[in-house]
Length: 71
Image 1 (cartoon, helix red, strand yellow):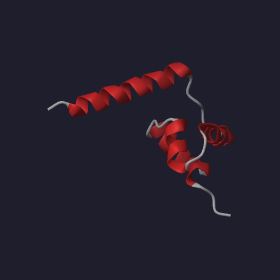
Image 2 (spheres, helix red, strand yellow):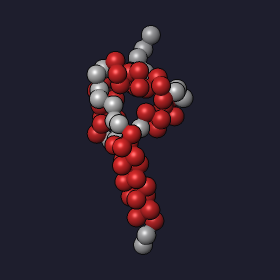
Image 3 (tube, helix red, strand yellow):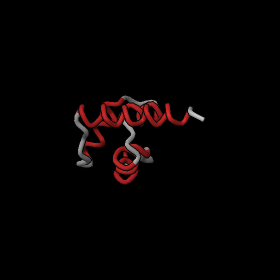
C-alpha cells in the first residue's frame, strides 16, 4: 500500500513547519481528520505548535490576506 503524502516526514516538515500550514488545513486537503495529521507529526517527532504560536500564525495569515486585497 502506497503511503499518503501526509504520512511522509519530509513532506510534513515542509508543509507544517516551513509553509506553516495547520493540521486542519493539511487534513482538509486529504479528507482526513486533523487528529490523523497530528498523529503523523508526533510519530515523526515533529514539534507541535502551542496555541499561542498557532494563533499568531493564523493572525499573520489573515493580515497577509487582507493586505493582498488592497490596491
